[in-house]
Image 1 (tube, rainbow, N blue to C red):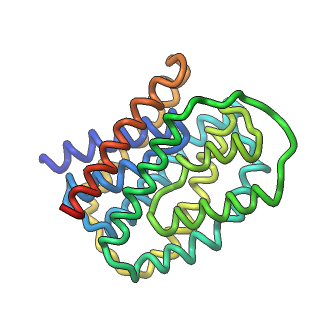
Image 2 (cartoon, rainbow, N blue to C red; image 1 turned 180 degrees about the vertical axis):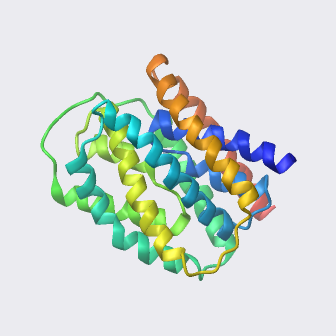
Image 3 (tube, rainbow, N blue to C red; image 1 turned 90 degrees about the horizontal axis):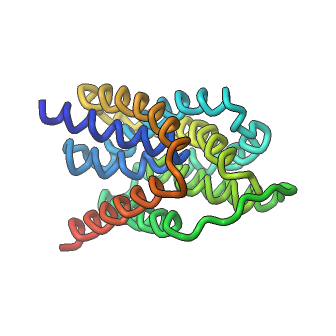
Length: 247
């Protein structure tokens, strides 16, 4: 019963982040599954990809209805990350659990610090294919290696590199997350990782519901209050994971 409650609460938080911020859900899902439900890092990354993929598809539908998805730009960005995601996902299965945990903690800390930086003014402009390809490939590699959707990196890249307005970057990020997560899942599908579906299923259901609420709350909140709160939580998670690994 305790595991079920934890899965429901954590799932709601993950969904809230995905629906409201266009990313960040998986960087909470992985440590939650490791430390609160007893999953190994390998199991947690696999489960996270499943949870994030299904939740992102649901959240993407809502943003698409509002016209906040740049389909062509997002597809080009995501396509560059497919091969790196598959290769990195295959390589991750051969690495020590400690390496995956430390790498994840570092990425989470970097993402949190990036979220705490002052927001850049929204702008529109021409897309730079070379930069878009490099950013998309890097994001795909992170997705496959760490089992995260990459939205916490996709949104800044879509705004800073591809010049999308923030609201469209959030919606487009969900499409990029979906493509990258599916590619990473394909790479991990033959690893024989066993998952506890009694935890994964309610976690996913709660995340899907949370994503709808996150999108609704994002329209109500002024400024970047939700983003800042999430960033501080993320920093705390990263610090805890590093301390737990080395102390």
